[in-house]
Length: 409
Image (tube, rainbow, N blue to C red; front, side, top):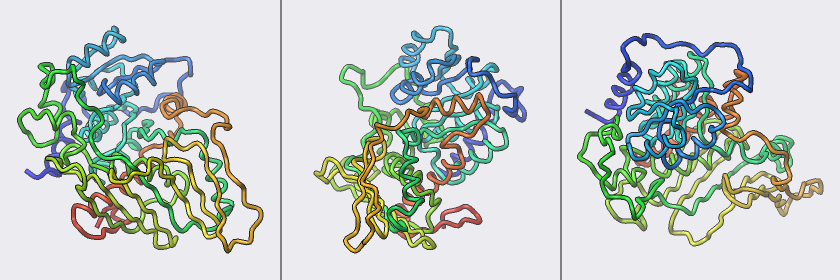
C-alpha cells in the first residue's frame, strides 16, 4: 500500500473509531462563554513541545492527557492528578466533557488527530506544520468550517510583538511595490528532541505501534523515534519544520497567498548518515501577477550566525535583525536611486503594547466564537506553500499551484 493511500485510510478510520456511539459529531455552536468559565482541554502529546503547550493552557482545566509513552504520561499526570490519562488519542476523544484538544504529536499524526477531534465538535490547537498533504490540509479546513470550531495552527510568530506596524508601512507604500523577499536559516534538520544521556535506548513504556500511526509498520527503531524529522514517513524536513515558520512570517507581512510556482533543490551536504531529508534546502517561489519572488535558503554549511530577513521594495529594503521569532527590530535602507526623504528609519517591537500570545488568542476565540489569527484558512495557505517546495524537490521539477482544483500540479 502506498503511503498516501495508507494515510487516507488511517484518516477515514480514525474519525470513526471510538465508543461506537458517535455518528456525525456535534457542532460547537453553543453561545459564547464567559471569560471566567474554564475550558476542559485534552492534551495529545505531553512531552517536548507538548509540555510547553500544556503549560500555556494551564489556566484552563486540563481534563485529559494522552501520550504513547507511559513514562511521559505519568510525569504529566503528577501535575494534573484530576485529568484522565490515555495512550490512544482516539479513545481520549470519546471523553464527553472535553471542549478542546491541543495536538502536539509528531508531524505525521497532526492531521488524523486534529480532524477526528473537530469531527467530534472540539476546538483544536495543532502544532505546525498542519498536515502532510494538501488533501489533509483541505479536509482540516473543511471540517473546521462545517463543525464551527476554533482552530489555531501553532506558528507562534502570529502573536509576536506587533508586526502590524510593518504591515501598515508596506501597505502605505513606504518601500514601494515589493518585488522580492529573502529568508535564510542557518540550522539543519535533526529532530525536536535528542535522547537524553540518562534515558534508556528503548523505553519499555512506549507503545511503538501507536506512535507509528499511519506510517509504514516497522520494528522498533530508536533513531526514527528520536530523529523522526530526518525521515519522510514522519516529517516534511526543512519544508515543514523551518520553511513553514519563515514563510508564515513573510505571508503575515505581505499577505500574497499561495504562489503560482515553486522550484526547489535539496542536498545532503554535511550530515551524511542514514537520513532521507536534506540538510540544505533552497526554494524559490514566484508570484507572477505581482512580479514578486520569495526565496528561502536553509543550510548548516553557512558560518553566518545571524542572517536577516529582507523585504525588497522598489524604493527601499526592509531588513530585520533576525528570523521569525527572533525579530525585534527592523531598519529601512533606501535604494541609491530613490529620491524620497520621507522614509521612516526603523522600529523596535519591544516598545509596542503587549497583545495576546498565540495560545491566549485561541482560548479567547473559543470563548467569544471569534476567528484565531492562524485559523485553518491561513494555515491552508502556508501548508500548500511549503508543500510545493517538497513536491518540487521530490519530483525534481518546477511545480505549479492550481487555484481552481486547489492542487499542486
